[in-house]
Length: 209
Length: 248
Image 1 (spheres, rainbow over the protein chains, first blue to last red):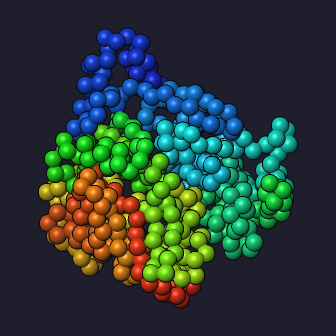
Image 2 (cartoon, chains in turn orange, yellow):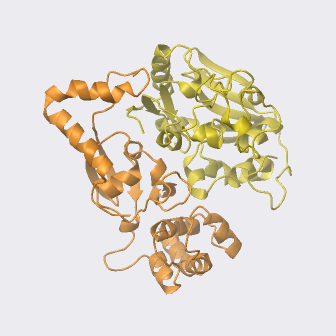
Image 3 (cartoon, each protein chain N blue to C red):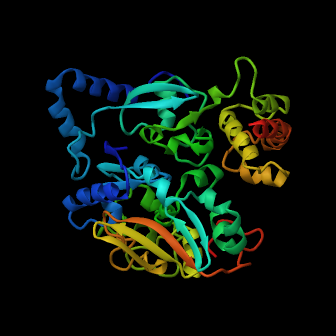
């Protein structure tokens, strides 16, 4: 996958909507083309125009102007350059796009960016404290818990949640509660010890509050 | 995904009004085909919009209702669950686990931890079939998507399709486990709409396909599920050890 700032599809849309917004004359034909595909538009608002939203990403308020269709994953990757969260299946089955919203692990590919407004989004980029890795990041390196690394950001976000949810007590529990993250390289045997290594440190931090 | 207008509701009244106003223009479209779709966890809706199976012109984000509609209340006469409660929260609730293990298990053993954090109980019971012909719009002949167009599954790969409750128009299965638990426990579903609130036995929420498989529930466009009530306490009715995400 090529990590360009904008995919061809999204750049085409953005240019078109930008032109529509900047040059008022272009709005009418564009709106007609866009709405023609949908059934009976129920609102006065034009579905083809971009929407402004402010997202709280890794503690920073980030204003964005986006198409309403933009998922949180695409907002992170294509609009904010935060390419740590990965697009695997884009249908909620693989877990590569896992992020935390208000402290809970969710799938950013099935979350509309607009629906995430007002909530705290934490991505893999927000875990390290400067050059100091998060205990779970360090554990994945120590335990060699990945091969190609594509699923790893999602695995690490899920692993932290797995510990915080209280499901890192046994190997069986870890496997069950990490089962929403698929690894094509099958690094599973080393992911379990990585979760076990980081768990005490994460839990002691949690208790300190 | 096709363009849509995004609206976020303030409360249940404005949510129902927004959905009902949009529904009024699309005549008698069944809920699943309504021009305005409620968005809760999004795990079915966004997935099917990406596949072009669902094409709402408006998405009505009802997550602000979670503040009042996500309570988990064990009462002496039974258990009440708010429709916006997330699967994970209900599955992890100690009293639900103790007195309604089939409810906790049916939620805990479904999907993944991330999906269970997102998906609501109301959305869970309204999830759409996983029939591959329904999910693949390159097949025109799906009576759920295109009423009257036929059923590709009847002559296709249908080993995992329904055996009971089918019709000549549709052999799709219903995918949820939680709904089976609700039926087994004689649950009631609470519904909020334009003309107020109503409660019906949960078993009456879903319809058999018969001659109109596109009509999947008895909900009208503009109605929202607000909660579920499970009567009594039934201890030790869990899912057998080792069983997972399968119909009871």
